[in-house]
Length: 61
Figure 1: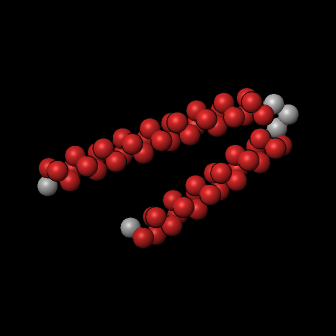
Figure 2: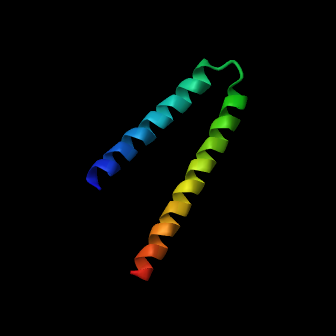
Figure 3: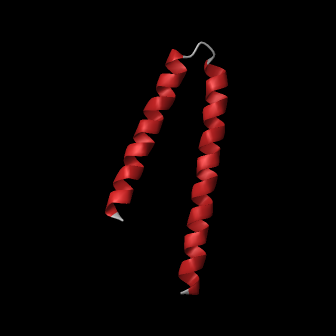
C-alpha cells in the first residue's frame, strides 16, 4: 500500500505541472483548461466510486 501512495503523489504533482505547461504553451489556453477540467472531474468521479466500493466492501466483511 505504501508504494501506491507514493505513485499517487508523483502522478498528482506531474498532473499539476502538465496542466501549467499546457496553459503556458497553448495559444488557446481556455480550450485546454476546459479539456483538463473535464478530465479532472472524470478522475475525481472515478476515485469517488472507488472509495465508495471500498467502503461498502469493508462494511460487508
